[in-house]
Image (cartoon, rainbow, N blue to C red; front, side, top):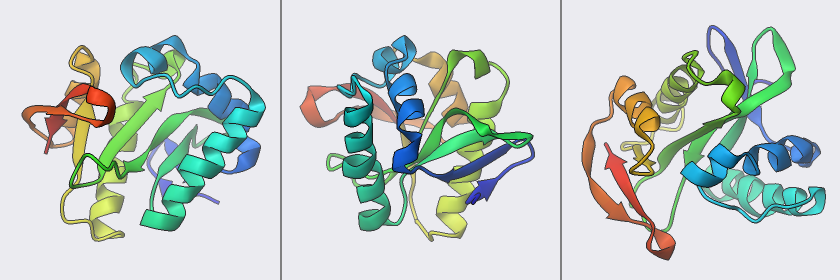
Length: 166
């Protein structure tokens, strides 16, 4: 069942049956470079990641990452988009990751804008931020396109430095 829809996309909660998709996306070289290695190396660890991180976030915060699919082909997952609450940030941040075949077509901006709207209107979140790897200029442009502006550099868990947008 679709939670969020846009003109071209649907987003729904992730389930353990999505483990093959999660395994493939989290091991995409661009995901590891721009977001980080989640140490998900097989289907069993992908199922654990879904239960331990994604489903736990839905339960604890009422939001999380959602599976992103094309509206005309909802069985084909093209990426993730959603909200994450990190211990090192005061506010939830918007996150997204798409398979490279879907880059440059406006899907990240469309999904991020819809999630931002959902967070503000449905979830009544007062502040939503965005973070990017300093080298990931494309992600910064997506955050700016949805109305966030660069504020400062921040250090996240594990000493990772990122650009913070509000």
